[in-house]
Length: 97
Image 1 (spheres, one colour):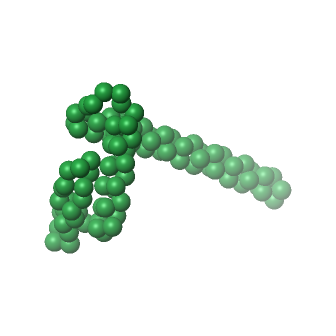
Image 2 (cartoon, rainbow, N blue to C red):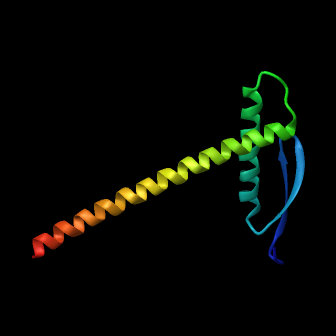
Image 3 (cartoon, rainbow, N blue to C red):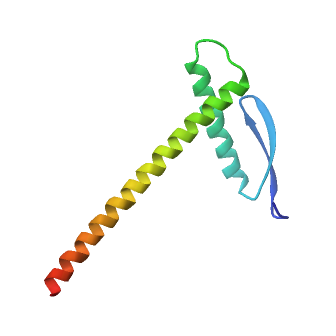
């Protein structure tokens, strides 16, 4: 991190943290809010009380699952677009020849 880093105070799952980051403080706050919401979703889905560490780990797994699903969707979309562009190029080439 460099001299442009700023310190941002966030609260996640009832715990306060100071984060040093180059990003805008509003962005850091939105990330913290997202993580907090994911942890609370996990907590609500559990029938028995669990440790904060376990809830954080399960929330991280959920976030990673969402990330992987979106990444796979993006890759599939890109592949579909590339295929369609190639088809259009072939059609144009056929018409020009």
